Length: 326
Image (cartoon, rainbow, N blue to C red):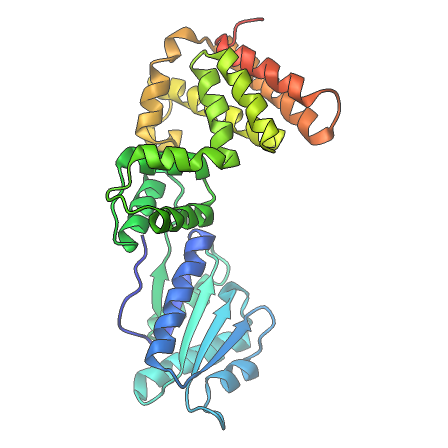
């Protein structure tokens, strides 16, 4: 996970990575800059609409303040003229250490604007590389780090449960860690508290339906489905959880066959181990039937045609029966 360095540079570029982490890193840098320059003006610019004159004016002393903290988004969209003004600022900052203005840029990543990025770094700008959090291992490390930032620890399985429930919603995952630490004093945070706390979460409720179906407990999964719907959980959310579990099962099968690596499966190791034990009851044809039925359920949920709940129930029964014809 990216950590903000204590030494402030005249220009810092927050580059790429997960959008939430990029914003979090930028906010930390901005707060750090404001603590170091309490009298500085805080100015917000967007490279897509900002010209060279606006940038030069922003970093120059004003009647109200001799320094400024300039946050500039979408560096990749900077014009050639704006790029030259930014390079001139970096070069001047290297020669004149009395300059008080600080610039914090965000670049979304990719090749667009890469030349300017490289030129700015060569001219003295500091680059903060933001991680992507694409793999389950990265997300687990992020979760552990979030607890550490709260001065707390967490049971590894509890952390893995949080990763499974929130998947790519990193902002919600971070908010949930903060809420758990606020509401409970347990250290480390145990699995039972996290599991109970997530009961009212729609995504967690949907995963409970999917877990019961995968375990072959179709009747219990049907009851959980009805309870979820009564709680107001969207049918499409439940289809999403069932689809996710089915895809991980299919990827686990590919892992066993040597066609995928553990990192490519994209699920926590404990989840893969649990599904691995179920594979012997499945066939490739059975998996194909389930995937087809879930696609049908997804279509009914999104188009409001037919009976989406019946389609979900059919998928649950099919999963509980390991993909065998009903």
